[in-house]
Structures are given as structure tokens and as C-alpha cells.
Amino acid sequence: MSSTSQKHRNFVAEPMGEKPGSVVLGRRLESSGFDRAYVVLGQFLILKKSKDLFQDWLKDVAGANTKQSSDCFQCLADWCDEFL
Image (cartoon, rainbow, N blue to C red; front, side):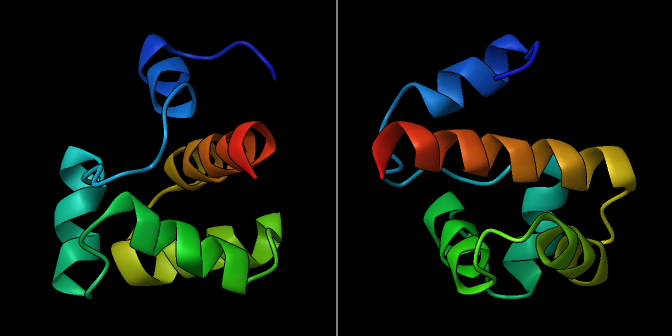
């Protein structure tokens, strides 16, 4: 795991549970039916943890920029490494 923010470390350190999405992207994702982090995780897994596919999907669905989509990918990948 590379240098990460405290928010990232907190997310990766605990089970998924009912975690909401991030504030800005969370609202955009929620309007498309992705209202919880575990739903986004499901899409991440459906896309077979592919960085390119997941980032393209997140950009299309939530209007994420490259940094946001990369951070989200890395966070979910790190969470999967920890818990799956």
C-alpha cells in the first residue's frame, strides 16, 4: 500500500458494513442506485478488479475525475486485500 490519507486508512481498516459513499461522488453514485460502499464494491468485483474498467465506469456513472477514480480504485483494492 502506498502513502495514503487517514480517511483511506480508516476505510481499509474496518469491515464494509453500511458505509456510505464519499460526500461528492456519493451523491452522484446514489442517484444512479449505488447508495452504499458495498454496492460500489460489488461493481468493482463484477469488473474483476480491473483498474481501467473500474475507473472508466466511475467516470461515466459519477463524473469522477482521474484522481478520484484512482483513489476509489486503490481504496477498494486495498480493502479487498485486507478482507477477502
